[in-house]
Amino acid sequence: MYIEITGRPISLEDVLEKLDMRGLGGLVTFAGVARPTDAQGRPLSHLEYEAYTEMAYAEIEKLCREIEHRWGVTQIAVLHRVGRVEIGQPSVIIAVASTHRAEAFAACRYAIDTLKERVPIWKKEVPLLSKAPTLGV
Image 1 (cartoon, rainbow, N blue to C red):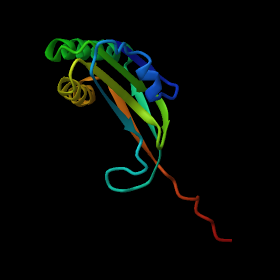
Image 2 (tube, one colour):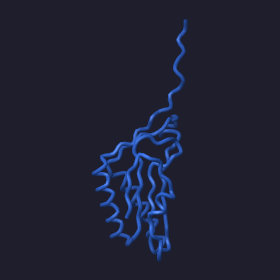
Image 3 (cartoon, rainbow, N blue to C red):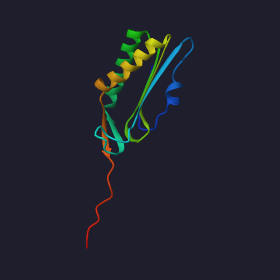
Image 4 (cartoon, rainbow, N blue to C red):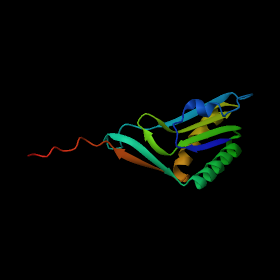
């Protein structure tokens, strides 16, 4: 199990290098990427993430242990950004490796869905501001 909450950019390579794939046949990854618009279609400048870091680590570890027990997954890595995340950059990456693909898919989906519900990490969408109004003379 590998967990990291960081202010630096993250990549799929960062996650994959943390897994030991020997003897495993399935690898599933999920990357949550900052979208250019909010749910109403309004353009965004970037995202800002805050975390209650100690509790977030504890909750992610608890989630990983639950996944290990439920699906028999032996390798899981979770990286999550905090701070400013530019549009198009990943804010979270999860990788799950298992003996078989079905368990890896189920565990990865459960990981992201549950992380979003339970882990104290908060996202703020920062709108793209139009040019400042020009004052008439």
